[in-house]
Image 1 (cartoon, helix red, strand yellow):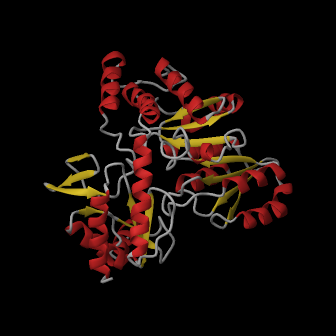
Image 2 (tube, rainbow, N blue to C red):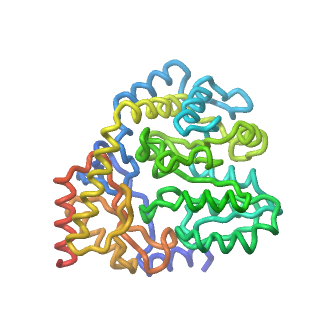
Image 3 (cartoon, rainbow, N blue to C red):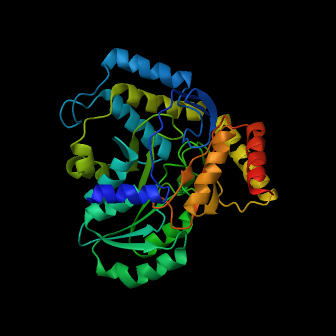
Length: 384
């Protein structure tokens, strides 16, 4: 038996084999699969913008004007005025000098880190950082040091012991962690970066559009835009589109344009996608009630679960219920699906062993009535 067969057989035996499940429709916090409608708690469409008429209209108009493809990398003939308009808008949104658009969050993180750092450098990363950050560090060849999750004291010990041995150094964290829904201690991280001559990179993928006075993210909310060197984020979550960005100083943008393989060797994002990104920033500005409602309902859901006896953590629109072993998690998920709630299990290696969970990802369309129904279904399952 070859390696492929062995891996598949082992996954099947442990009930861990993943499969694709095509949907026939999705809108307003619901998804249609196999002819049945479910309330979707596995989407990152936090503000419900993916079907917003302003975004779909902007995408259609861009397709009619520019076509459906950029047809080349941006360093050849794929660089459109739309790309520059979006980068200017992102820079203003994130309060940075400039920005650079990437084709996905994964490409952004792997490309940025591997371009900026090498074998003579060090990267200090939160232990629960996204796989794309981990892969970016591996590709860079930089010396990797992982600090315990949201533990500035552990980070400080690592910096005191190791920073002096390397040429340049980066501290990288998410601002809202995708699987735990909690916030990073950004103020402490920025302070340590100053003391030990490090750059700071913050992945705002799950915070962009939701937190801060202008919806820019946790960096804005904490007033740390100037102190944060690299602010990365995506358009494919709360902003309802696709692609990613890095907000940064102009010199770093110029450096990446000339060295970042993930940017240089990719066909540019198509005009409809870029236009959608532009319009999403305008909608975030014009409709602040979306993020306000989302966070209010998330707080309500979290408090209701706690009052019902569940051990809940996090402080965002991502609310994990850690079940433990994978088999039980899958069983609970299947029971919820039968009740009409599309809440899929998150299992290792996405999360640590024995921390399999249901990750409830709330959106603007998940009303208190819907959330009460979900809590009731969970209480019945757990007999509380």
